[in-house]
Length: 402
Ligand SMILES: [Fe+2]
Ligand SMILES: [Fe+2]
Image 1 (spheres, rainbow, N blue to C red):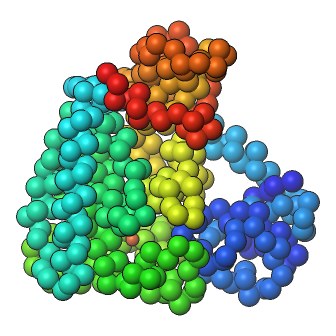
Image 2 (spheres, rainbow, N blue to C red; image 1 turned 90 degrees about the vertical axis):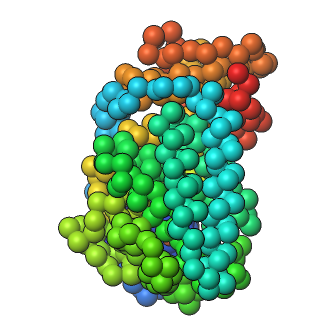
């Protein structure tokens, strides 16, 4: 049986089934292993992991620990309680209408971030004006429809991962800050911070940064310097405000004090830095990497909910979920009728009932004439999110085909 336990309950002889963290942040070659060496408990603790899943069929048990399915049911219950909250902003244009423009903005943002970060790598001053122009375009697209640009963010190639991750974090920071009703100048600063937050990675040797396997402890230690390196780069540019500096320095802090570089706790981390931590991890775990398949957005949100007990401010995770949706635009979903569809927009009433364009019948096993449904009307409902690979379909193709 798979059970969840606190690190304090961990003992040699237990079989680790899942380290229950963003896979980038632990130093173990595997996530599943029999715990033999007591020193490994220390390493897990140092990685900031507060809870793990153990397999009690393969190792020692903790009798009263909750099972994985109990934890899952509890988290889903909490997510669903929050799901009926109304969407904060009426949609001005549909995601489908916005998509072509969003694609151009996304590509342009990637080019600018790449140039600016390469300047930083070469020791040249960071051109903040270029980044500001990108934030203006992103904000305009998000104001028209926040789903279109969001649906593009998971696409990343191995060689431009760091740049496109920064574009994703910048875009989600703008979306998140607007959702919280923060004033325009703070939204702008949050966007700049998101786009630049990992600029310090330009100081990390390529063979460590883009290593296609697990990092050694020494390599981890090198990576952990990037917030301070980035902060120094932005300070040297002389033109960056307090908010981007804060986000760059503190996006790896965790509210239980297990983060880096300063091991700050709850009250000592600013709201914008806490927001950037949520957005940063969400993007990291939903992205495909060479050695790791990204999680579906819905799964990733469930994990973030679970981790929020220790790592993230729970209220902010709730807000984040409301702002991107339980089924973000571009998600492939299965409906009760057996039809597969792609989420095209959120609706006013309910995060569980977005607009969906159906295009495939799993009962007849064939494509059907695409049709757009508003699930708040009650004609059908989502039973699950689905992996596109499982069905061999590309949901984005049906998002584009207006
Ligand atoms: Fe980072
Ligand atoms: Fe990051």
